Image (tube, rainbow, N blue to C red):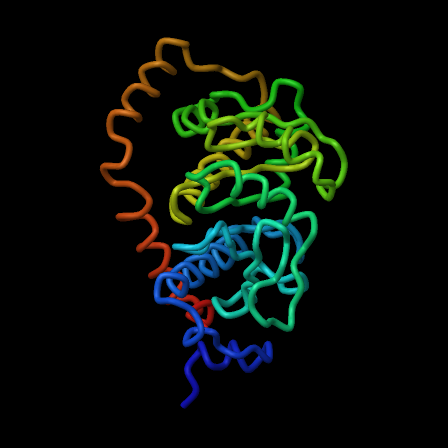
Length: 263
């Protein structure tokens, strides 16, 4: 009887690359494919556009990203495209990479050693907040940390020109999240799990803000309460973090839904 993983490969006419890569790269591929499937599950995908990339362990800034033409819900570990910082494809694949995704992701992978994963989305609520003059606000408890970790980058048109890289990196600085004005949201993390969790709370903060503003006049938390929340969150950060508890739970969820991402 065919396993779900085998069926996923057969449906897309993709050969497994598990035996052609290191164990560390395969684990990264599985986790990145999971991030794509979870993004689709939460309604964060944009047809075949936007990207999540991850650096290949023990490599010279090689990274993995989605092939142009596959939906997020179709991404598998073997279908991911491996490229270098110049955009050269490093492993035989029937797919091609996306130029816009390459410009944004290669800039951050090159500049930030902590950017093991870069996640970029075009969601309705994320774009809505990116259009607001005041940007993201610390409207509630779950929005305060994303608000404190977010920087902004001005819209320059489609991100396909190399000269934008320097400005994008400078605008983000050492922040974990970036709102690209009139465009979307972006997070980085030392792991796929951390970048995903950061995006989850950033996107949730954007949604809560838009819904709250649509309902009426906002009641903002007092500044002292915001400072207390930031202090307390930083004190417990990592104790029950994304890598240890959140991500394994999400992988179990995916395995129940469709383990084909592991192919």
